[in-house]
Amino acid sequence: MSYIDTIKKLPQVMTPGSSACQGCGGELILRRVMQLAGNNSVFAVPPGCMAGAGVDGWSRQNGCTAPIHITLLDNTASFMSGVSEMYQRRGRGDVNIVAVAGDGATADCGFQSLSGAAERGTKMLYVCYDNEGYMNTGFQRSSTTSRGSRTSTTPTGEAINGKEQGAKYLPLIMAMHNIEYCATASPSHMMDFVGKIKRGLECSKRGFAYLHVFSPCPTGWGFRPDESIAVARRAVQSNMFPLWECERGKYSLSYVNHEPISIAEFVKGIGKFDKLDGEALDALQSAAGARWELIKRLCGEA
Ligand SMILES: Cc1ncc(C[n+]2csc(CCOP(=O)(O)OP(=O)(O)O)c2C)c(N)n1
Ligand code: SF4
Ligand SMILES: [Mg+2]
Image (cartoon, rainbow, N blue to C red; front, side, top):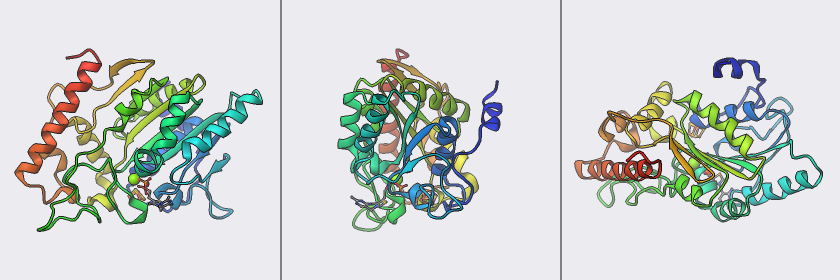
């Protein structure tokens, strides 16, 4: 059965009526994860754009049709460790334990709790939708924000020209926790993403599974809502966001770029990068190149 047929047959767990912006990558990611996990699941969505958009429920009309917790910004994985443990002890390992959190809640505020749950091998699937910033509170920079991005706390002007530090590459840090499953995904490569959600759910029955998903944000990044999928596709095609997976220590590439497009091509039309000069573009290009070489070596493709 094709992934489209699979998706068509599955009911939506996230109800209509979310207030996320048009073209929000995060909403698409969350809908797919919830749909694949289904109603025999317990979800956690901490503060951020997705909780703010109402997925945790803010009236009797909308929210989520499965049990869902709005955890704290910094305790999602430890909170869900307790939930997972309770279900294991009751012999209910069939229940999917799933967290979907932003990059701020994952790579920064919640990292201690995430790292602990990963190291303990908690049986759960943790999905980070990475829109490279604290979008729900006004587009502040996070540790995963790309170098040179204009955010509300890293403006472009005379004093600084966007974020001065490079992005923390969290998926590899998570893979180094020796977890059951770790993968990157993009909404532009939906078949790959759906396969990884399924694999992540399966692996969450044995231990910790982690998905890091590129999440274009038209409002915060400054591009047209109907460009979201194209932006995500260019991120993959330029090696800005390589697609790979690692199951029990075995790495493999999910998408091989024989002729990658340049980073200059990727950033075209994305407002947060519109003040990048040649030097900043070169820095982004060489960081992307170095990361790609490292991943290829890990995957035995170098
Ligand atoms: C400890 C703590 N500090 C600050 C906040 C305020 N806050 C709520 S959502 C949010 C942004 C979260 O960013 P991210 O996790 O990346 O999700 P996004 O908004 O980008 O979807 C912040 C800072 C909070 N809820 N808790
Ligand atoms: S600000 Fe960005 S991440 Fe938040 S709902 Fe809008 S598009 Fe989605
Ligand atoms: Mg974010």
